[in-house]
Image (cartoon, rainbow, N blue to C red; front, top):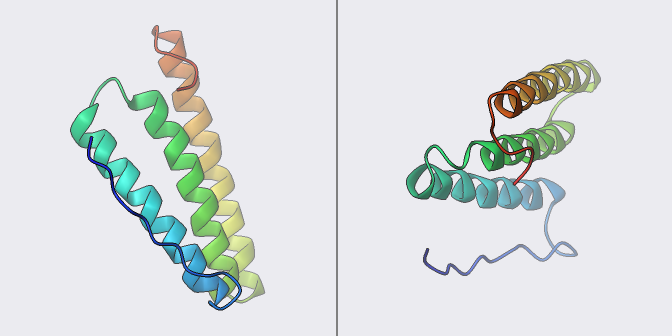
Length: 100
């Protein structure tokens, strides 16, 4: 694994949307690394990263959507979270690790 310097926006000076997008970019890099370094072994970790990604996307949605859009995004990400939990349970049932 190579070391990478991640520059985060100064939260006091930056727009909250910019900060949210920067956090999303960090998660995307993590997922890309998992896909290359641990394609099968990293499934449990990937599920955890997907949950974090959903949380970050919901954070971004709250900055750019109206109230109706926010409610729909929350509903969609709740559904996604439920699907991730089901996938994790199935993975554990077949002998996979519970959490990274």
